[in-house]
Amino acid sequence: MTETISGSLSVSNDVIADIAGYAAMSCYGVVGMAEQLQGAESVRLLAGQRLRKGVLVSSNEEGLKVDLHVVLENGVNMKSVCANLASAVTFTLQEIAEIDPAKLKIGIHVDALKSRMY
Image 1: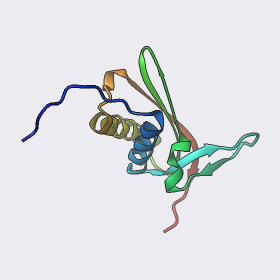
Image 2 (image 1 turned 90 degrees about the horizontal axis):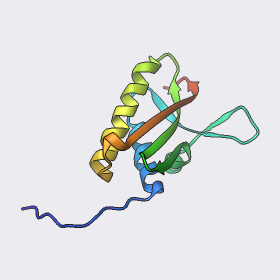
Image 3 (image 1 turned 30 degrees about the vertical axis):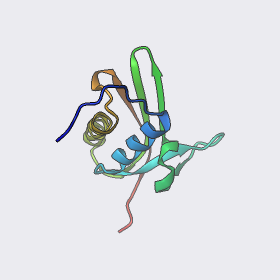
Image 4 (image 1 turned 180 degrees about the vertical axis):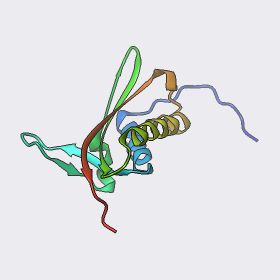
């Protein structure tokens, strides 16, 4: 039996970045999250425990903005993968962090394409 408890939920930007990063990694076509290297035109593929470096979270009076820097698999339909990615991140943040989707803006930045090694 569930009981409603009054109060408010406060979630830090780092937690939101972690949740968004893990949701992104579950999407087909996403090879990994990317970190832009300062002073270079290259990106680094991030390890699983450092996904939040590829996610930038900011808030203002309009709501929350989540920018995802991703590396996609070469040959995928980028439009479909990005739509699926935005949907998955929005759903996951709504379910786990109780963020209103109407106040959430997802920005997707495809920083690189990479072939998967099988």
